[in-house]
Amino acid sequence: MRLIWLALIVLALPSSAEELSAKAWLENMSLALKGQEFKMSLIQLQADHIRPLVYIHGKVEQQEVAFLEHLNGPPKNAVRVGDTVTFIEHDQPAYSVQANRIQGVLPPAFAGDISVLEAGYQFVLGGRSRLAGRPSQLVRIIPNDENRYGYQVWLDMDTYLPLRYDMLNLDKQLLEQILVVELIVLEEAPAILHEAYKQDWPAIMAQPTREKGDNWQFKWLPQGFKILVKDNHRLIGSHESVEYIALSDGLANISVYVARAGDTAMPEELMTRNGLSLATERVGNAEVVAVGKVPAETLTRIAKSITIE
Image 1 (cartoon, rainbow, N blue to C red):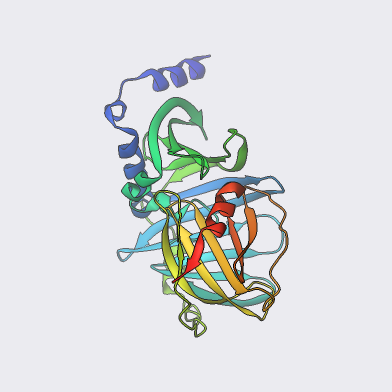
Image 2 (tube, rainbow, N blue to C red):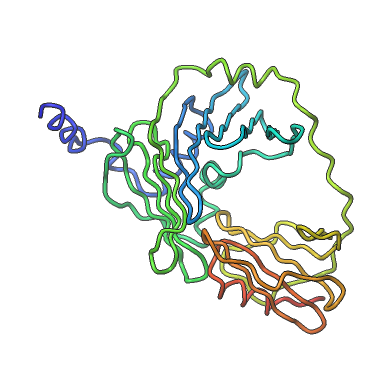
């Protein structure tokens, strides 16, 4: 009984954190994800998968080092040292790519410039709860329109580290969730990160030579979405080359593939799951496929708006 009362007192105690805006909470989260030493045991929940993971982060000689371990199935790990991420799996040689975050733990935007998200979202404070044994503050990331999904994140009131992350569709149904079951704040980077820092990992994979893509443009994009990449790209599972355009609003990412009709076999359908949608459209003499974790209607409108200049 005494422990219950203590927990209630902790949640009720006034704190300077109460004065923070929703954006300030998220900015503190970004700083914490980049600057603190910690170990998270977490579960990734999707419609067809439940993945238990361990994520460890710290700094070694002023450089970020992180380690991600998948606890179920064959051994599968990822290590990040600075802007190099190395993937280690049991059935293939280790390989490295250039990236400043390990994909699949939390949205990379959570450790980025939060202001970038304001073009497409607004931030609203929610209530408080207790997660992983720690008091937490809910921040809702609400889309400004119906062209993207909404998100919500619970932040530890002591460290500002995220303890839970939800992605919700337009009907507020859960599409994906990351749930921390244990958070350990470390005083210094653990030995495994020091070993990772010293390890001689494979060199970053050379990117295939890509020709400059045609000057495809969009008559319409949702507010906040920008073109990040535009080049020639090989469709997954195919040896055929297509035009590739990467779009992002900072949180949601969309891939657009364009091929001359009849030149390349484009996918006709893709099962929508975990928030991933696909739209296929014929635009003039081009076939357009758009894929991303946004509503299918958004992808359809983007695909129909493409034009060449």
